[in-house]
Length: 476
Picture 1 (cartoon, rainbow, N blue to C red):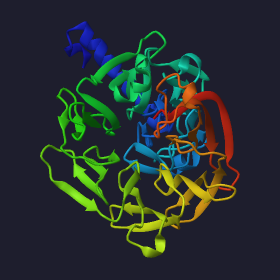
Picture 2: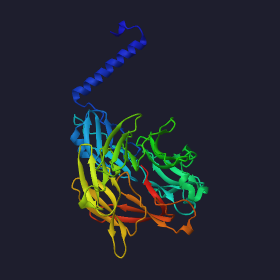
Picture 3: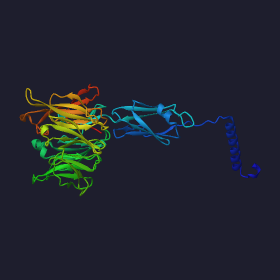
Picture 4: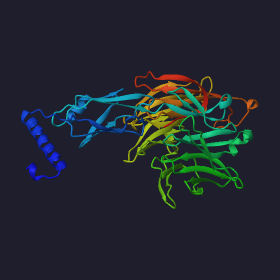
Protein backbone atom coordinates (compact mmCIF):
# COMPACT_ATOMS: atom_id res chain seq x y z
CA UNK A 1 0.00 0.00 0.00
CA UNK A 2 2.86 2.37 0.85
CA UNK A 3 4.43 2.07 -2.59
CA UNK A 4 1.41 3.82 -4.08
CA UNK A 5 1.93 6.78 -1.73
CA UNK A 6 4.44 9.14 -3.32
CA UNK A 7 4.83 11.89 -0.72
CA UNK A 8 7.13 11.05 2.28
CA UNK A 9 4.94 12.95 4.77
CA UNK A 10 1.90 10.91 3.70
CA UNK A 11 3.81 7.69 4.25
CA UNK A 12 4.80 8.78 7.79
CA UNK A 13 1.17 9.61 8.59
CA UNK A 14 -0.08 6.24 7.38
CA UNK A 15 2.59 4.41 9.38
CA UNK A 16 1.65 6.38 12.53
CA UNK A 17 -2.03 5.55 12.08
CA UNK A 18 -1.26 1.85 11.69
CA UNK A 19 0.99 1.89 14.79
CA UNK A 20 -1.57 3.64 16.98
CA UNK A 21 -4.34 1.33 15.77
CA UNK A 22 -2.28 -1.70 16.80
CA UNK A 23 -1.61 -0.21 20.27
CA UNK A 24 -5.32 0.54 20.81
CA UNK A 25 -6.29 -2.94 19.70
CA UNK A 26 -3.80 -4.51 22.12
CA UNK A 27 -5.11 -2.43 25.01
CA UNK A 28 -8.72 -3.28 24.22
CA UNK A 29 -7.97 -6.98 24.00
CA UNK A 30 -6.01 -6.95 27.29
CA UNK A 31 -8.72 -4.94 29.09
CA UNK A 32 -6.21 -2.40 30.36
CA UNK A 33 -7.88 0.77 29.02
CA UNK A 34 -6.97 3.69 31.31
CA UNK A 35 -9.87 6.16 31.64
CA UNK A 36 -9.38 9.72 32.91
CA UNK A 37 -11.19 10.02 36.28
CA UNK A 38 -14.21 12.36 36.61
CA UNK A 39 -13.58 15.80 38.04
CA UNK A 40 -15.22 19.05 39.14
CA UNK A 41 -15.04 21.51 36.24
CA UNK A 42 -16.42 24.57 38.04
CA UNK A 43 -17.49 25.79 41.48
CA UNK A 44 -19.59 28.97 41.40
CA UNK A 45 -18.36 30.30 44.78
CA UNK A 46 -14.66 29.55 44.27
CA UNK A 47 -12.50 32.20 46.02
CA UNK A 48 -15.51 34.55 46.34
CA UNK A 49 -17.01 36.56 49.21
CA UNK A 50 -20.68 35.65 49.52
CA UNK A 51 -23.52 37.29 51.42
CA UNK A 52 -27.09 36.72 52.57
CA UNK A 53 -28.46 37.12 49.04
CA UNK A 54 -26.32 34.18 47.84
CA UNK A 55 -28.61 31.28 48.62
CA UNK A 56 -27.07 28.47 46.50
CA UNK A 57 -23.83 27.36 44.86
CA UNK A 58 -23.36 25.16 41.80
CA UNK A 59 -20.83 22.39 41.21
CA UNK A 60 -20.35 21.41 37.56
CA UNK A 61 -18.84 17.99 36.75
CA UNK A 62 -17.28 16.86 33.48
CA UNK A 63 -19.67 13.88 33.25
CA UNK A 64 -22.75 12.36 34.85
CA UNK A 65 -22.25 11.34 38.44
CA UNK A 66 -23.88 8.87 40.82
CA UNK A 67 -25.92 11.27 42.92
CA UNK A 68 -25.87 9.34 46.15
CA UNK A 69 -22.05 9.12 46.16
CA UNK A 70 -21.81 12.91 45.91
CA UNK A 71 -24.40 13.37 48.70
CA UNK A 72 -22.42 11.09 50.99
CA UNK A 73 -18.96 12.54 50.33
CA UNK A 74 -19.40 16.29 49.82
CA UNK A 75 -18.01 18.12 52.87
CA UNK A 76 -18.34 21.81 53.79
CA UNK A 77 -16.31 23.15 56.70
CA UNK A 78 -17.72 24.79 58.80
CA UNK A 79 -20.98 22.95 57.99
CA UNK A 80 -23.75 24.68 56.02
CA UNK A 81 -27.12 22.92 56.04
CA UNK A 82 -28.78 22.73 52.64
CA UNK A 83 -30.59 20.71 49.99
CA UNK A 84 -29.26 19.01 46.83
CA UNK A 85 -30.80 19.24 43.36
CA UNK A 86 -29.46 18.05 40.01
CA UNK A 87 -29.71 19.16 36.39
CA UNK A 88 -27.57 16.84 34.26
CA UNK A 89 -23.93 17.37 35.25
CA UNK A 90 -24.74 20.36 37.48
CA UNK A 91 -25.36 20.07 41.22
CA UNK A 92 -27.09 22.95 43.04
CA UNK A 93 -26.76 23.14 46.82
CA UNK A 94 -29.36 25.51 48.33
CA UNK A 95 -28.74 26.77 51.86
CA UNK A 96 -31.50 26.40 54.44
CA UNK A 97 -30.41 29.60 56.26
CA UNK A 98 -28.29 32.59 55.20
CA UNK A 99 -24.58 31.98 55.39
CA UNK A 100 -23.05 33.18 58.69
CA UNK A 101 -20.85 36.23 58.13
CA UNK A 102 -17.19 36.55 59.07
CA UNK A 103 -16.22 32.94 58.27
CA UNK A 104 -13.75 31.13 55.97
CA UNK A 105 -15.14 27.99 54.35
CA UNK A 106 -13.69 24.95 52.62
CA UNK A 107 -15.50 22.55 50.31
CA UNK A 108 -14.06 19.13 49.45
CA UNK A 109 -15.17 16.05 47.54
CA UNK A 110 -13.51 12.66 47.20
CA UNK A 111 -14.59 9.01 46.77
CA UNK A 112 -17.66 10.02 44.73
CA UNK A 113 -18.09 8.07 41.47
CA UNK A 114 -19.50 8.63 38.01
CA UNK A 115 -22.28 6.48 36.54
CA UNK A 116 -19.62 3.98 35.36
CA UNK A 117 -18.27 3.62 38.90
CA UNK A 118 -15.03 5.52 38.30
CA UNK A 119 -13.80 7.43 41.42
CA UNK A 120 -13.58 11.20 41.15
CA UNK A 121 -10.36 13.17 41.14
CA UNK A 122 -10.23 14.66 44.70
CA UNK A 123 -11.41 18.27 44.75
CA UNK A 124 -10.96 21.07 47.24
CA UNK A 125 -11.75 24.80 47.16
CA UNK A 126 -12.22 27.79 49.49
CA UNK A 127 -14.62 30.70 49.78
CA UNK A 128 -15.52 33.34 52.37
CA UNK A 129 -18.58 35.06 53.70
CA UNK A 130 -18.59 38.83 54.00
CA UNK A 131 -17.08 40.40 57.08
CA UNK A 132 -19.42 41.40 59.88
CA UNK A 133 -19.62 45.17 59.60
CA UNK A 134 -21.97 47.97 60.53
CA UNK A 135 -22.26 51.75 60.33
CA UNK A 136 -23.34 54.23 62.98
CA UNK A 137 -23.40 57.96 63.75
CA UNK A 138 -20.61 58.71 66.20
CA UNK A 139 -21.15 60.51 69.50
CA UNK A 140 -17.59 60.88 70.80
CA UNK A 141 -14.50 62.88 69.87
CA UNK A 142 -13.74 63.33 66.17
CA UNK A 143 -16.46 60.80 65.29
CA UNK A 144 -19.26 62.93 66.77
CA UNK A 145 -22.00 63.53 64.23
CA UNK A 146 -20.08 61.68 61.49
CA UNK A 147 -20.88 58.43 59.75
CA UNK A 148 -18.52 55.63 60.81
CA UNK A 149 -18.05 52.12 59.37
CA UNK A 150 -16.86 49.44 61.79
CA UNK A 151 -15.61 46.07 60.55
CA UNK A 152 -16.35 43.77 63.48
CA UNK A 153 -14.48 40.85 61.90
CA UNK A 154 -11.26 42.76 61.26
CA UNK A 155 -11.69 45.21 64.18
CA UNK A 156 -11.18 48.13 61.78
CA UNK A 157 -12.89 51.53 61.95
CA UNK A 158 -13.30 54.05 59.12
CA UNK A 159 -14.82 57.54 59.37
CA UNK A 160 -16.78 58.01 56.15
CA UNK A 161 -18.08 61.59 56.15
CA UNK A 162 -16.21 64.92 56.35
CA UNK A 163 -15.96 66.82 59.62
CA UNK A 164 -18.18 69.71 58.44
CA UNK A 165 -21.26 67.45 58.05
CA UNK A 166 -23.48 66.30 60.89
CA UNK A 167 -25.41 63.13 59.93
CA UNK A 168 -29.03 62.67 61.06
CA UNK A 169 -30.20 59.49 59.27
CA UNK A 170 -28.74 56.97 56.82
CA UNK A 171 -29.49 53.74 54.95
CA UNK A 172 -27.33 51.20 53.12
CA UNK A 173 -27.96 50.28 49.51
CA UNK A 174 -28.80 46.57 49.23
CA UNK A 175 -25.33 45.60 47.94
CA UNK A 176 -23.61 47.43 50.79
CA UNK A 177 -21.44 49.44 48.40
CA UNK A 178 -23.18 52.80 48.94
CA UNK A 179 -24.95 54.78 51.66
CA UNK A 180 -27.75 57.34 51.47
CA UNK A 181 -27.89 59.89 54.28
CA UNK A 182 -29.33 63.17 55.52
CA UNK A 183 -26.87 65.66 56.96
CA UNK A 184 -26.52 69.36 57.66
CA UNK A 185 -23.60 71.73 57.91
CA UNK A 186 -22.23 71.54 61.45
CA UNK A 187 -22.31 75.32 61.72
CA UNK A 188 -26.13 75.25 61.72
CA UNK A 189 -26.12 73.99 65.32
CA UNK A 190 -29.62 73.76 66.79
CA UNK A 191 -31.13 74.69 63.44
CA UNK A 192 -29.56 71.68 61.71
CA UNK A 193 -32.81 69.68 61.60
CA UNK A 194 -34.30 72.34 59.30
CA UNK A 195 -31.33 72.33 56.95
CA UNK A 196 -30.80 68.67 56.15
CA UNK A 197 -29.50 67.80 52.69
CA UNK A 198 -29.60 64.38 51.02
CA UNK A 199 -26.27 62.82 50.09
CA UNK A 200 -25.05 59.57 48.55
CA UNK A 201 -21.70 58.07 49.55
CA UNK A 202 -19.92 55.37 47.54
CA UNK A 203 -17.69 53.29 49.82
CA UNK A 204 -14.02 52.87 48.83
CA UNK A 205 -13.12 49.46 47.42
CA UNK A 206 -9.74 49.52 49.14
CA UNK A 207 -7.57 51.72 51.34
CA UNK A 208 -6.08 53.37 48.25
CA UNK A 209 -9.45 54.59 46.95
CA UNK A 210 -11.30 57.63 48.29
CA UNK A 211 -15.01 57.71 49.06
CA UNK A 212 -17.24 59.45 46.51
CA UNK A 213 -19.69 61.96 48.02
CA UNK A 214 -22.63 63.28 45.96
CA UNK A 215 -25.29 65.86 46.86
CA UNK A 216 -28.71 64.66 45.68
CA UNK A 217 -31.06 67.23 47.27
CA UNK A 218 -30.31 70.63 48.77
CA UNK A 219 -32.42 72.42 51.41
CA UNK A 220 -32.80 75.81 49.76
CA UNK A 221 -36.53 75.72 48.96
CA UNK A 222 -37.65 72.66 50.91
CA UNK A 223 -36.98 71.16 54.31
CA UNK A 224 -36.03 67.48 53.94
CA UNK A 225 -37.35 65.05 56.54
CA UNK A 226 -37.75 61.24 56.62
CA UNK A 227 -36.75 59.13 53.59
CA UNK A 228 -36.70 55.52 52.42
CA UNK A 229 -34.69 53.69 49.76
CA UNK A 230 -36.02 50.92 47.50
CA UNK A 231 -34.41 47.48 47.53
CA UNK A 232 -33.24 47.84 43.92
CA UNK A 233 -31.61 51.20 44.73
CA UNK A 234 -33.49 52.94 41.91
CA UNK A 235 -36.11 54.86 43.93
CA UNK A 236 -35.90 57.25 46.88
CA UNK A 237 -39.02 58.55 48.64
CA UNK A 238 -38.56 61.57 50.91
CA UNK A 239 -40.88 63.88 52.82
CA UNK A 240 -40.33 67.57 52.03
CA UNK A 241 -41.85 70.77 53.42
CA UNK A 242 -42.11 73.95 51.35
CA UNK A 243 -40.20 76.72 53.14
CA UNK A 244 -42.57 79.39 51.80
CA UNK A 245 -45.72 77.45 52.71
CA UNK A 246 -45.43 75.11 55.70
CA UNK A 247 -48.86 73.60 54.92
CA UNK A 248 -47.39 72.17 51.73
CA UNK A 249 -45.72 68.99 52.88
CA UNK A 250 -45.56 66.10 50.49
CA UNK A 251 -43.72 62.93 49.57
CA UNK A 252 -41.30 63.26 46.67
CA UNK A 253 -39.74 60.58 44.44
CA UNK A 254 -36.17 60.62 43.16
CA UNK A 255 -35.05 58.35 40.35
CA UNK A 256 -31.75 58.19 38.42
CA UNK A 257 -31.32 60.81 35.71
CA UNK A 258 -34.70 62.39 36.57
CA UNK A 259 -35.61 65.55 38.48
CA UNK A 260 -37.39 65.00 41.83
CA UNK A 261 -41.16 64.68 41.46
CA UNK A 262 -43.86 65.26 44.12
CA UNK A 263 -46.21 62.32 44.70
CA UNK A 264 -49.02 64.60 45.89
CA UNK A 265 -49.51 62.19 48.77
CA UNK A 266 -49.41 63.66 52.29
CA UNK A 267 -49.25 61.22 55.14
CA UNK A 268 -47.34 59.82 58.06
CA UNK A 269 -44.78 57.05 58.51
CA UNK A 270 -44.01 55.20 55.25
CA UNK A 271 -42.00 52.28 53.84
CA UNK A 272 -41.12 51.11 50.33
CA UNK A 273 -42.01 47.44 49.86
CA UNK A 274 -39.27 44.96 48.79
CA UNK A 275 -40.73 44.89 45.25
CA UNK A 276 -39.48 48.50 44.92
CA UNK A 277 -42.81 49.44 43.29
CA UNK A 278 -45.17 49.78 46.25
CA UNK A 279 -45.34 52.35 49.03
CA UNK A 280 -47.05 51.65 52.37
CA UNK A 281 -48.04 54.83 54.21
CA UNK A 282 -50.05 55.68 57.32
CA UNK A 283 -53.04 57.79 56.22
CA UNK A 284 -55.65 58.98 58.70
CA UNK A 285 -56.83 55.91 60.60
CA UNK A 286 -55.38 53.30 58.29
CA UNK A 287 -52.46 52.24 56.09
CA UNK A 288 -52.57 52.86 52.35
CA UNK A 289 -50.75 50.83 49.71
CA UNK A 290 -49.80 52.98 46.74
CA UNK A 291 -48.04 52.24 43.48
CA UNK A 292 -44.86 54.19 42.82
CA UNK A 293 -45.45 53.98 39.08
CA UNK A 294 -46.32 57.25 37.37
CA UNK A 295 -50.05 58.16 37.41
CA UNK A 296 -50.90 54.82 39.05
CA UNK A 297 -54.01 54.38 41.20
CA UNK A 298 -53.99 53.36 44.90
CA UNK A 299 -53.67 49.60 45.35
CA UNK A 300 -55.37 49.05 48.69
CA UNK A 301 -56.29 50.63 52.03
CA UNK A 302 -56.13 48.80 55.36
CA UNK A 303 -58.36 50.73 57.81
CA UNK A 304 -57.81 48.27 60.69
CA UNK A 305 -54.13 49.18 61.07
CA UNK A 306 -52.56 52.42 62.24
CA UNK A 307 -48.90 51.76 61.38
CA UNK A 308 -46.74 49.41 59.34
CA UNK A 309 -43.58 48.25 61.09
CA UNK A 310 -41.76 46.15 58.53
CA UNK A 311 -41.88 43.86 55.50
CA UNK A 312 -40.36 40.40 55.28
CA UNK A 313 -37.28 40.29 53.05
CA UNK A 314 -39.15 38.56 50.21
CA UNK A 315 -42.05 41.03 50.45
CA UNK A 316 -44.65 38.32 50.96
CA UNK A 317 -45.57 39.41 54.49
CA UNK A 318 -45.62 42.45 56.76
CA UNK A 319 -46.30 43.35 60.39
CA UNK A 320 -48.68 46.11 61.45
CA UNK A 321 -49.86 47.79 64.64
CA UNK A 322 -53.58 47.94 65.44
CA UNK A 323 -54.28 50.63 68.04
CA UNK A 324 -57.70 49.09 68.79
CA UNK A 325 -59.53 52.39 68.65
CA UNK A 326 -62.76 50.62 67.72
CA UNK A 327 -62.69 48.08 70.58
CA UNK A 328 -64.05 49.20 73.96
CA UNK A 329 -62.50 46.22 75.72
CA UNK A 330 -59.03 47.06 74.38
CA UNK A 331 -58.58 50.62 75.57
CA UNK A 332 -54.92 51.60 75.63
CA UNK A 333 -53.95 48.18 74.26
CA UNK A 334 -51.89 47.78 71.08
CA UNK A 335 -51.95 44.66 68.92
CA UNK A 336 -49.23 43.31 66.65
CA UNK A 337 -50.58 41.73 63.45
CA UNK A 338 -48.95 39.50 60.86
CA UNK A 339 -50.36 39.75 57.32
CA UNK A 340 -49.20 37.86 54.21
CA UNK A 341 -50.06 37.79 50.52
CA UNK A 342 -52.14 34.60 50.91
CA UNK A 343 -54.79 36.44 52.88
CA UNK A 344 -53.62 35.40 56.34
CA UNK A 345 -54.08 38.07 59.03
CA UNK A 346 -53.36 37.02 62.60
CA UNK A 347 -52.89 38.82 65.90
CA UNK A 348 -49.55 37.82 67.42
CA UNK A 349 -49.79 39.74 70.70
CA UNK A 350 -51.67 42.46 72.55
CA UNK A 351 -50.12 44.62 75.25
CA UNK A 352 -50.64 47.89 77.14
CA UNK A 353 -47.11 49.10 76.39
CA UNK A 354 -45.52 50.19 73.12
CA UNK A 355 -44.47 48.20 70.06
CA UNK A 356 -41.38 50.10 68.98
CA UNK A 357 -39.94 47.96 66.22
CA UNK A 358 -40.01 44.46 64.71
CA UNK A 359 -37.79 42.74 62.17
CA UNK A 360 -38.35 39.43 60.39
CA UNK A 361 -35.67 36.78 60.61
CA UNK A 362 -34.21 35.85 57.17
CA UNK A 363 -36.52 32.82 56.82
CA UNK A 364 -39.62 34.93 57.71
CA UNK A 365 -40.59 32.36 60.35
CA UNK A 366 -40.17 34.59 63.38
CA UNK A 367 -39.92 38.21 64.49
CA UNK A 368 -37.49 40.03 66.76
CA UNK A 369 -39.33 42.89 68.43
CA UNK A 370 -38.57 45.73 70.80
CA UNK A 371 -41.52 46.25 73.16
CA UNK A 372 -42.15 48.16 76.39
CA UNK A 373 -43.99 47.24 79.55
CA UNK A 374 -45.53 49.86 81.83
CA UNK A 375 -44.80 50.20 85.51
CA UNK A 376 -46.39 52.78 87.84
CA UNK A 377 -44.27 52.18 90.94
CA UNK A 378 -42.61 54.24 92.18
CA UNK A 379 -43.39 56.35 89.08
CA UNK A 380 -44.81 55.80 85.61
CA UNK A 381 -42.18 54.30 83.32
CA UNK A 382 -41.95 52.32 80.11
CA UNK A 383 -39.35 49.57 80.40
CA UNK A 384 -38.03 48.24 77.04
CA UNK A 385 -37.40 44.57 76.36
CA UNK A 386 -36.60 42.34 73.39
CA UNK A 387 -38.66 39.29 72.44
CA UNK A 388 -38.67 36.63 69.75
CA UNK A 389 -42.11 35.77 68.33
CA UNK A 390 -42.78 32.55 66.45
CA UNK A 391 -45.13 33.50 63.62
CA UNK A 392 -46.72 30.06 63.28
CA UNK A 393 -47.55 29.56 66.97
CA UNK A 394 -47.48 33.22 68.17
CA UNK A 395 -45.27 32.04 71.05
CA UNK A 396 -43.33 34.94 72.59
CA UNK A 397 -39.88 34.29 74.07
CA UNK A 398 -38.33 37.10 76.18
CA UNK A 399 -34.68 37.77 75.31
CA UNK A 400 -33.44 40.64 77.45
CA UNK A 401 -34.85 43.56 79.47
CA UNK A 402 -33.14 46.95 79.30
CA UNK A 403 -32.77 49.33 82.25
CA UNK A 404 -33.77 52.48 80.37
CA UNK A 405 -35.61 53.57 77.27
CA UNK A 406 -34.62 56.46 75.03
CA UNK A 407 -35.04 56.36 71.25
CA UNK A 408 -33.59 52.84 70.86
CA UNK A 409 -32.83 51.70 67.29
CA UNK A 410 -32.36 48.03 66.47
CA UNK A 411 -30.83 46.32 63.44
CA UNK A 412 -30.87 42.57 62.72
CA UNK A 413 -27.76 41.25 60.96
CA UNK A 414 -28.09 39.89 57.38
CA UNK A 415 -27.44 36.34 58.61
CA UNK A 416 -30.01 36.75 61.42
CA UNK A 417 -27.49 35.92 64.15
CA UNK A 418 -27.03 39.28 65.89
CA UNK A 419 -29.05 42.34 66.89
CA UNK A 420 -27.41 45.75 67.21
CA UNK A 421 -29.03 48.49 69.25
CA UNK A 422 -28.11 51.79 70.85
CA UNK A 423 -28.74 53.30 74.27
CA UNK A 424 -28.55 57.08 74.24
CA UNK A 425 -27.63 59.42 77.11
CA UNK A 426 -29.60 62.66 77.15
CA UNK A 427 -28.15 65.98 78.32
CA UNK A 428 -29.70 69.14 79.72
CA UNK A 429 -30.35 72.21 77.57
CA UNK A 430 -27.32 73.99 78.99
CA UNK A 431 -25.04 71.25 77.64
CA UNK A 432 -26.22 71.47 74.03
CA UNK A 433 -23.22 71.80 71.72
CA UNK A 434 -24.64 70.66 68.35
CA UNK A 435 -27.74 69.37 66.60
CA UNK A 436 -27.35 65.66 67.45
CA UNK A 437 -30.75 64.79 68.93
CA UNK A 438 -33.37 62.08 69.38
CA UNK A 439 -36.62 61.97 67.42
CA UNK A 440 -38.23 63.79 70.35
CA UNK A 441 -35.70 66.62 70.05
CA UNK A 442 -33.69 65.71 73.17
CA UNK A 443 -29.98 66.46 72.92
CA UNK A 444 -27.73 63.39 72.73
CA UNK A 445 -24.66 63.69 74.92
CA UNK A 446 -23.40 60.15 74.36
CA UNK A 447 -24.62 56.67 73.46
CA UNK A 448 -23.53 53.07 73.91
CA UNK A 449 -23.84 50.32 71.31
CA UNK A 450 -24.85 46.79 72.28
CA UNK A 451 -24.76 43.45 70.48
CA UNK A 452 -27.42 40.89 71.35
CA UNK A 453 -26.90 37.27 70.24
CA UNK A 454 -30.37 35.64 70.52
CA UNK A 455 -30.60 32.07 71.77
CA UNK A 456 -33.43 29.56 71.60
CA UNK A 457 -32.75 28.35 75.16
CA UNK A 458 -33.30 31.74 76.86
CA UNK A 459 -29.55 32.21 77.35
CA UNK A 460 -29.14 35.16 75.00
CA UNK A 461 -25.76 36.90 75.10
CA UNK A 462 -25.61 40.66 75.57
CA UNK A 463 -22.30 42.39 74.85
CA UNK A 464 -21.51 46.09 75.21
CA UNK A 465 -19.27 47.33 72.39
CA UNK A 466 -16.59 49.89 73.18
CA UNK A 467 -18.16 52.32 70.72
CA UNK A 468 -20.06 55.56 71.25
CA UNK A 469 -22.70 55.83 68.57
CA UNK A 470 -26.36 55.98 67.60
CA UNK A 471 -28.62 54.55 64.88
CA UNK A 472 -26.51 51.45 64.10
CA UNK A 473 -27.19 49.50 60.90
CA UNK A 474 -25.60 46.26 59.73
CA UNK A 475 -23.88 46.35 56.35
CA UNK A 476 -25.70 43.97 53.93
